[in-house]
Length: 311
Image (cartoon, rainbow, N blue to C red; front, top):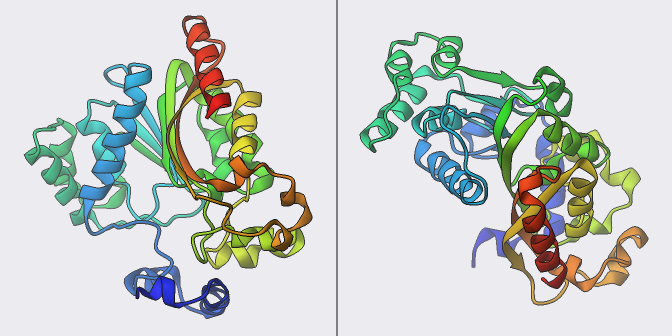
């Protein structure tokens, strides 16, 4: 039996709260393998995530050469800035809620070398090999690293990004900021642009919906966020409605489902009990989005919304 299955959800909940309260810096937890925001030692998974999101979005709306990418929540490394150049991009913006990314220059040299060996060469990679510090790596890749969360979106000019993507990040955007983030993504996306996200609706305690047990005054706190427990508890329909209000149309990709809601309604907070069975059985989903006011996509918007309604 795995440790995850052996420890009940409440054991992981209190364990994370206790560990996060200790006077230990994030860099130490990362070395111990706790509270990590990705795998900075191996660029291959980062490249695969970028490839998957890029290809899914490109299949819906072609991403131009020399594109600019925006990744939300890069975590412990900025390897996607390397991937952007390897896939023909001109540069990237990487936005996170804190300065979590490793600044180890050899890690980025290795990432650039690995991608070049895979046949995705870029003139920028030679400059990465010559870089002597983290800022020089960013300069070589024409990358910006913003660490103020949703507030940092204001630093990105209007209509300046062709491709926005994230991998299990949007569920961590604070609930009160989600609508703002959706509107900001629409603002910075160029006409003809596209974005792709994978969104995980499971809790961070047992992989179910135990986060719906807590009242807002207990859940929407810095302590929960600092412990790595926080998700915004928005449901599938809540997220789609936020995107619709921000001016997006979409195509739903893979949907992960539970056979039945993993938490009885009687154990949920009252605000969540009225959700449909569909909402409460969707554990995660992939979505590709584009500006709904792009005239060429009117027919597709209608088709995709019909398919979404029938899902």
